[in-house]
Length: 375
Image 1 (cartoon, rainbow, N blue to C red):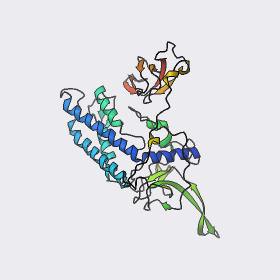
Image 2 (cartoon, helix red, strand yellow):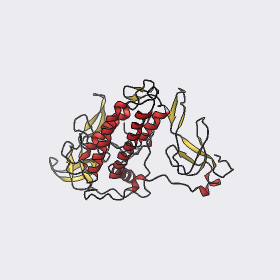
Image 3 (tube, rainbow, N blue to C red):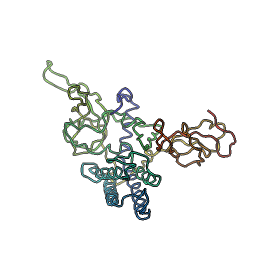
Image 4 (cartoon, rainbow, N blue to C red):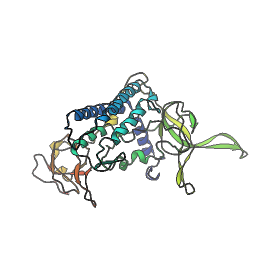
């Protein structure tokens, strides 16, 4: 369920800029090309595991999953090639990139079906180390929100991907039971959101162009309070969504119904904010801003100034040295600047069950420094 609107207000300019930027990132050629390349790395590693892991090994993976894995790679390759030529139909139901997400999801759900770790399509315990290494390669092809451009078949019980911006902006949405996806690094200056166009459609109508659309409520002037005349005002009515041409504009989430015990879906108007014409000429622009890394700290200055320095699992290590996991009774580790900070395998509070945890790492001693960092 999306977080409350008061946390992430779509009338707030900063929130609007971030949501708009994220939707452009999630629909960029560069992101989908990275997904495809990461899946190929996973494919080669999985095939190698099938061929080389001992048949009597407890963590052996299933060879029968290989055809689905290669099918996914083929779909990614086909879809990314089309996207690079500006053909965004690949996100429609049954098309290459929609199908790739579907098949990759199946692989993720059935990666390792040993009953000690899996039940009815879901992981129930941390995987053995060798399997977890494969799982990490699979997850490298996953981005939170990568379903953003995928068609939502129109129907009374279905709604747009995003009804409020919390699903895109809340860091907790990037954390899952056994893994965490990297939270995007926003550029220092995010451009303003376009003011909107005169193209307005209603839920259930055909989307005329690919792009980012804003749900809006429209108030019209009336003659003698009866006949509707021109539009008097247009107000935001929810989170931006990316809609693909020739699909039907979706409904949005409405209010909770006590009678039906569910959240109702309601129709809305959609106003085009930005038409996506990227790659129509076959040219891929510089999209490096979508893959910024956290700010690094030069190890040459890592003396007293780094006391208490902290980073999270998945971040790039800013300073070579000794690091400890806050709140976990595990050994300190040596990490070199530029390496990715790891997770830890440790007992969970309460249950004592050993699980993979994404943690906060604290610098104990910088390389070449004899002074320990203190809080």
